[in-house]
Figure 1: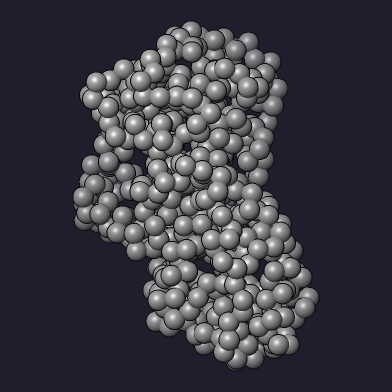
Figure 2: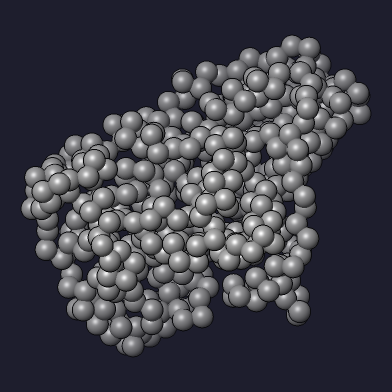
Length: 480
């Protein structure tokens, strides 16, 4: 089929899907359907998606399979193509289908921006309509500025700027998605083996996945109905199911931040005390994306540039790093959080702060070691939130108290897990009654780790007090 006329009423629109696996509140899909032209939803496994870590790639594969079925139910289908170059894949599809337009939802990391900018320029040169839409965040980064015209470097004033802004009302799912006269060929998702790197861990993590748009909406509804009132307190208790758990769905766009924001606003108007804190957490995610857009160095270099001179330990072969990765540091809060990640693919936010602080401060290891490990192990991996979270914990990121905060993982456990519900759920060694989830950890980890529930629980690799003193001494003697 020859290339179509982009202005033709019958020329198909290619909907290039990435991290927007939903039908409702999808501006690009909405615009394509409003045109009354045929719509061809496409996902391209390009270099950026093919290089994902084991857990996020596994979760992406599940999300694609589920969203493909949802599109089938809507009278459409998901076309899968694999090509290192997304542009080449799009050009091939245009040639095959006569499509005259390509629509997509914006992404904000530098690699995605470069890819999308190249695609938009090349397609327009060919006479193809190429258009990007919002939807992955609430406020475009170039629309939020300080009074002097720059970007915000501190969260609190950022929150004050955006908290009263209008957020676009979520769009409903289109009643119909017009199909093309004939569908182009599609790869078989199973051939991509998106779960391969997870090995036996895939079967352990899978029961904890809440997959797709309907599950995400149910999660949001249940959270706002039953949990958000006490969210101010329960969100810090890792042994309590007190959070929304929406991070994995937001990461793949199975629910939009706009949908979460408006639902949270309704809860706030109903007098549910924790709703404002929930809204602040949505804006914290937003803040991470804005920083990534304005200062992309946050992804791979110290955000506070003076920290480039700090003498981090960068040897990942160190015994302490291995113990941290395996959840065998001898510090129950750290180990419980790491094991939760291997079994569920996620980690409680308080746990994330503790394990990151311990690695970067008690062990004085570079935050990039932890950032890369999370990128490998989290099903809710998000480039902006992961990078900002690690740099915030390390002290090299956007924080008013950049390095004096050294969480004590022992007193933190006393404060937030008094009854040791969290530690007991995830640590099996030395316990008479071993929780099934603690035992599942040994089914999820690589066999070559050679670990068993009958092992003796280790002594701390670094004494908590000694580690804190070492960190503060390093900071006080810093030459940066």
